[in-house]
Each structure stands twice: as structure tokens, then as C-alpha cells.
Length: 285
Length: 105
Ligand SMILES: Nc1ncnc2c1ncn2[C@@H]1O[C@H](COP(=O)(O)OP(=O)(O)O)[C@@H](O)[C@H]1O
Ligand SMILES: [Mg+2]
Image (tube, rainbow over the protein chains, first blue to last red):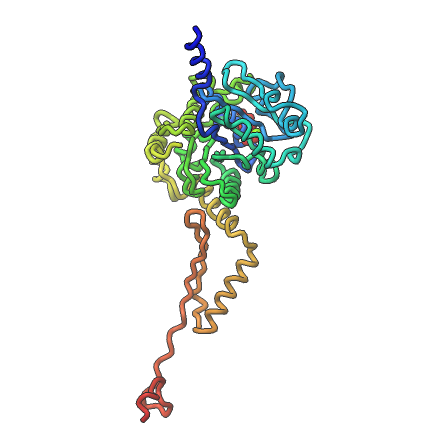
């Protein structure tokens, strides 16, 4: 079994891409719109499609991606320990309980955003790139240092917003800042859309929001009552096959991988989302 | 009650809170993107009018400045009507008409 196992060993990481991982930063401006939920679910969805994924919680001082992922009691070292040289990068990477190619680098809880610099983030991302297909960075709210840290290494930026005036306003501010940094064009995740309210004209529709922001959608995630229990139990919805939000997150993951995935109707009997599906179906990824 | 029949058919675009949200957002973002305080904006309009008034007389009642968004790029569109042109001088007047110097010799 000499030469054969040699070959098998060499193909131990068959998905290794020549260009290295794509760094995707998930940001929003406003807090509480679903950045962490999106990072966790898209990460899980990518890992379920056999991508090698590492999630970085860049929300230093307010870490919670570990909780949503159900990994909080496995933390030994964090991002700031890596930056300050107290541990090797590998030691701060927590392996997911079920998905073998999914890792989390947690944020420090007792420090602030200035403990890390944009250059540190670029350095860490560059160290990870050869070994992964995707690096997802969960950005803190705001437009200050934490935001600049999180977008510094980004190849692609996802802006999460809700169909509400204040959330869309903050998304616009972020788009402007990204354009100024030459980080565009970003893609939009419209989270917490409610089909019935949109149908009644009581909520901004996906096309209202894309009209106003003039950027492309990469996902429409419905308001889903199973999101909170899934965070409670530390099992992102994208682990399961049943929920609609989970499905929406899996579609985002596929679009990130370059697939063209039609936008699903949010509600089976709602013509409006079928129309939207046709409108944006060709723009995936 | 405007919009009653429209809402009956689920097409009440004019009066719903969703369309109010869209209008408010468009207004807010326009001003965010221009990033000029209102008093500066007013000063700019006044100055534009002043410059134009140096050359032609302007019909103040018809002046209209509109701010617009064009794919994220804000623009100011001005409609500045001149006052009615003065009647051309009567050829019988003592004063030689403008542009008549050619014919003098
Ligand atoms: N699609 C959704 N449906 C229902 N609840 C959601 C959805 N997305 C996010 N939430 C809830 O909204 C809250 C804020 O989400 P989170 O991802 O922590 O936002 P952020 O990271 O932007 O601050 C959480 O309680 C989360 O469970
Ligand atoms: Mg968060």
C-alpha cells in the first residue's frame, strides 16, 4: 500500500484552491439586524457543502458568535491572544462539534476594538487563506475601528439590513464608506422580511430597498420564529433542512460559491415574492 | 377615503406605511449623501441665483431647485426662468438700435 496511500495522503485536502480562501465580511452599520445570525448560518451552510470555513468574531468586547454556534464553553484563546502573541493562530481556532471543516476564532470579551488593528486582521486572514475556502468575518455594529478592522481583509462584503427606515439608512452609510475604500460592490442580505406585511404594503419590499440602495441582493431571509430557539440551543438553522430562514441562508452560501440560485418565494401563496424571484433570479452571487 | 378601492385589491401604494417609509428614506438618504447642512444648502442656492442674476434677470417666482438621486449619486437640478425679454427698441427711436454700427458708413 505504498504508492497508493501516498497519493491519497496528498489529496487529503482536495478542495484546496490555488488562490486561497475568499474573505467575506458581514456588516450592517446598525446593530441587531442579523449579522451574527447570518455569519453563523452561512458558515454552517458552506461547511455542509464541504467547504473549509473559518468564522472570525470581530466584535471584540461583545462576543456572541460563539454562543450562536454553541461553542462558548470550548474557548481557551481568542483573537486578541493571537494578535498579542500569547498563542498560535491554530490554538485559537475552535473546531465545530459536528462539521469537521468548520472553525471559529472567537472575539475577546474583556477588551475593546483598539486591541486589534486593520493590519492585524489582514495578517491573520493571509495566514488562513491557504488552508480554507471561506473566511467569514462577523463585523461589530458601527462605523468605527471595529468596522475598519473587519473590512480590511475583505474580498467581498455582505451588508445585512432589515426592511426598516433606520436599518436601510445605516446600510447606505456603509455602502458609501465601502465605496470610498474601494471595497465595493457589496451585496445585500435583506433579513427579517415578512411576506404578509410586504403584501399589504406595510413593509419596505426587497425591490424598494434595492431601488434605494442601488446594490444587488444576495439573499432575502424571512422573519422566522425558529431563529431565536436555534440561537438558544447553539444550533444554527442552516444545520437543519426544514426552516425557511435556513433555506434562505443555504441559498446565500450557494450564491457565494458562484451558483445562480433563484430567489425563493417567502410565502407559498404570495405572488409578490415570485415576481421578485424572477426579477433577481439571474443576479445570484 | 382615498385608496379604499386600491387597498381592496392590495394595491394601496399611495397610503400605506411601506410607501411612506420609502419616501422618507429617499429624502433622508439624499441629504445623508449630499452631506451639507441645510443652511449651507440654502446658501448655495442663493449664490447660484446671484451668479445667474449678474447676467440675466431672473423670474424669482418660478425658481425651483430639486435634489435627486441618480444611482447613489446626488444631483441638484435647477429650473431658473429668466424674466420676459425686454421689447426690442423701436426703430423710429432717436437712439440707434444695437448692432446698427455696421451700417453707419
Ligand atoms: N430572520 C430572523 N427571524 C427572526 N429573528 C431573527 C432573524 N434574524 C435575526 N433574528 C434575531 O434578531 C436578533 C439580532 O440578531 P443578531 O444576528 O445578533 O444581530 P447583529 O449581529 O446584527 O447584532 C437575535 O435575537 C436574532 O435571533
Ligand atoms: Mg452581532
